[in-house]
Image (cartoon, rainbow, N blue to C red):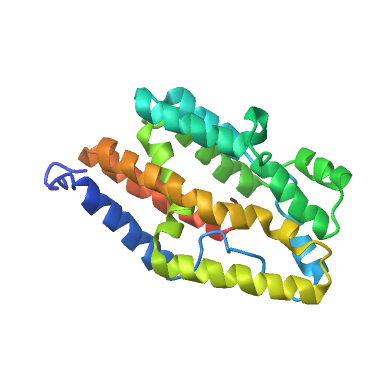
Length: 241
């Protein structure tokens, strides 16, 4: 910023959320940031896409970083709840295992093996993935704590939009039809991860939005939030979710 530029004033929380959703719509339209349920003609096509995940996810690590860095007790409590949801509520007597396990169930239905997924998880990342993944983890470790929590709204927040949620539900129903036609043995097991996320993410997204509204409250924080929000969307478009 030069001495002649006028600093943009802080928006209200509601205005900032609206602007972020406008950014989402400008980039993605009515599409889902991470593609929704797989659309392909064969089991082999879907297996190829699933292999690109490299057998693992950093979602638990990211949620742990958000929990550790948060200084607000009530926010920290709910972030712990999110961490339990992601890491496996069955650890505390709940029904569902870790979301990474649910993703693995999906992959097993499309012909991948546990051994193959373990090997994929150990493989080196590409230079591009190292750069984007390094930026993403640095946000969690270096940015003010409301920013990384707020960026979760990129993926979880799409379920708050009734039009996008309608696309998601239709996508899931079509996937059931497609998977049966392909001969997937257990269609519901193949879709359980996406089905659960379509529900629990709404509660999570309301939390993300509340954090943004209350704590991303200065021009500097709001500009940092915009930039991180856009870059996270672009990561999703590249399949780096």
